[in-house]
Image 1 (cartoon, helix red, strand yellow):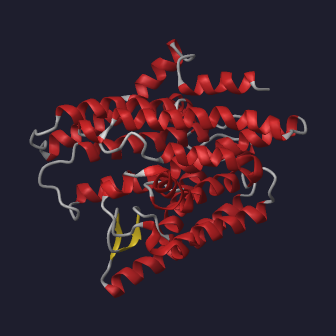
Image 2 (image 1 turned 180 degrees about the vertical axis):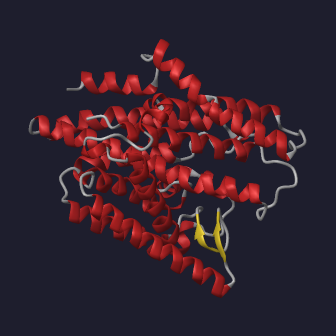
Image 3 (image 1 turned 90 degrees about the horizontal axis):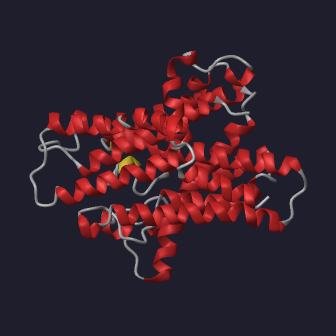
Length: 360
């Protein structure tokens, strides 16, 4: 069953990713870390990737569960299920890196692991996750959320951006992929696990709402700790209670709470046979939710061109930068609708679907 609120959540996640990436390429002149505009951009960024990974994990897990229910699957069957995802996600990651390459004013080396290679790792794990109980996956989620504490300094807490996205040799590349890159498997695979829990708890509103309440208790404690100690509550990187690069345990708990809250709100009563939140009023988001991978890759093509053209140029003022960022974010909504009406067969999602069908 295709749930409308899942497509809406996918759309919101990828649009938030577009917003934060655009803001990173076109930072306005004179806006410091403490500026309200910077806080808003950081808030979107802090939610975009966790939601994107969670809902992607939900999708892969849902696909694996359906495949497993059709008939018993051999190891070869699962390899044929994994391979198209591994191939396309890895290829798209390299394409993104080339489109926004550091040599042309961008932010990545050509081989930088990122959110798509994280999902490639998740695709390898998903068949195993489909055979684990809800309780076992819940325990695994807790352990992975605590992994930043175990990793410690190996996560590169004091690294610059360029140290985090560069690697010399296969050894360092694997380190970036697994524990000290931008979206390393540890601890970011926790959001994939969260997606599997959301899938299995679709009809258990009480359990999900209990997790949200527990999460907000933790948020209150973390804010109180920030006030008492005088530390910043949240920063993209640096000395704060919550940090994104690297993702620490408080960030994982807080962002997971907001992902759960967003999913529960958008769901409305759909899982029990009713309507998603706002009924058909948010249906305009659904086309974008069907092609999130395509939008994710395509928006980097435009940002790569902008980054190249802006090399050596002065930064835009606050209002022009804000207008460009919001305009670039919102334009993907009508573009996605036009895509679904006229060329739905041209997308990375369609390539994946055809490759998966051919492997059955």
